Length: 88
Image 1 (cartoon, rainbow, N blue to C red):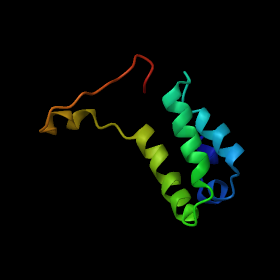
Image 2 (cartoon, helix red, strand yellow):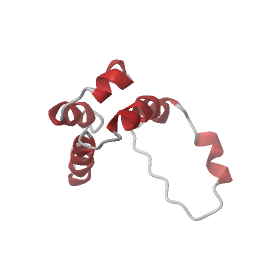
Image 3 (cartoon, rainbow, N blue to C red):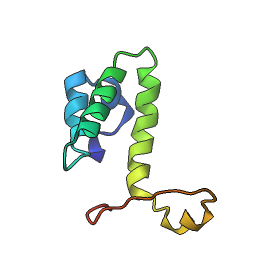
Image 4 (cartoon, rainbow, N blue to C red):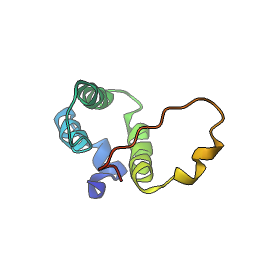
């Protein structure tokens, strides 16, 4: 999936491309994941979508690769952290 996450590819996507790309992020589809996917598909029609695509190309790999577990003790407010057995 990361090979597709470059700004040029993301900026040229059609809504059906976005649905296919973002559906791969959810191994178990749910109503929430469907809403998220539709929201991403709708973003394509926004006038600032090229800027959003550039940000997205950087943000998604970071979210999957950067481990913040060591920073959990720094949280100063009540927080519920969910982590599944197959999350990486």
